[in-house]
Length: 479
Image 1 (spheres, one colour):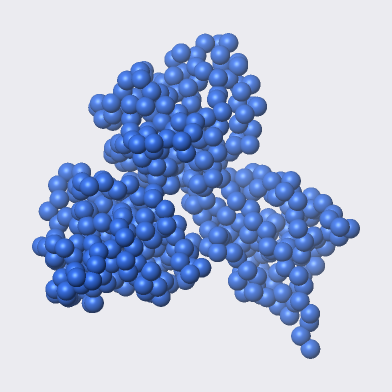
Image 2 (spheres, rainbow, N blue to C red):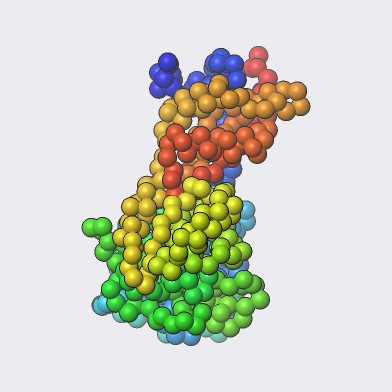
């Protein structure tokens, strides 16, 4: 059998009839240029600064919605949390960070390390200073680090709510980061001009497409209220890290802990239980739901806990769907296994076959957070899910597989014509996303077939896989 690697990069497969087409008919670069923005990794803008200067307020202003949690006390934001933003048709990721402090200890030291990682890996950096206070020794320490940054840096003077305060901005020149940009994140003053400047310095492609590298792998524990998330975290840490009570909704804020399992350190985040109608929540419950969603989006693997002693509920399925849509690797942990008898096990098997058939790829494990039964089994399934989430299939190997698969099972006819799959590429990982360039539309059933065959051939246990289609019409030959 001929291997794809035996051919030059300007040769494309036409799997429908086994023939070949050279670059005079189809150009590889042109096909790859057809990747939609949604398939490409986005450049990253990090928002950094000392505590309580308004970083999260600015992030909310940039993304145009209130997702980053804002309170009048410092230290609310702890981790690097990423949000997708768009300005003047350019899409990018905004990374909110905790307050940076040079002499931090304990938890604050971990927060500072997360902020420093954002500075090292971002494609552009906004360093926020409170203009009403002026530059502090902490601001000066941040500036010394950022003056050595390889990424472009914009100095943002926040809380300039009116023109009378513009004179207070001038003294920030002494930070050595260039001209300070006066804004009011709360009122929106100057933020449009700031964003115009930001998109002018952001590259088209990220410097580091893998935004989650560095530090312990992040695991979010999610599920409906009172399913045992806090009990599991306490069992893993061997400490009463989270408050546990029979009353549902005890946990409000995400609680994160470093846990050593299987010879490596993991960062587990306990989250508030997600209720049926988050959009109708108010007050503390509303903010708890926002933080839970942010924890899912900033995680690498999400462990969805389900009470195995009770029937699988519609809310369980909603949570699974939400995790799947975020593109995170997933493990389904059936908790409270110590309460399951033989009859319940048989019934649960039927519920899994009926309700979880569309996510058969998700890793499953039966545990008891109360007794500690099988909690160590989480390690291999999380490892498998992460490896799948990070997997990249070489283009040559992918197209060899594609030719063999489509030759054995061609796509269904559409409008009397057989669509051809010209070329395939893996656009990104996390989750693995594949783009097929075709001469015609591929039915949803056939795309699911290709996804299933991808899993059989390359693994991807525990990770969602996305298969997108780009239809290209054949161009006229050049004269």
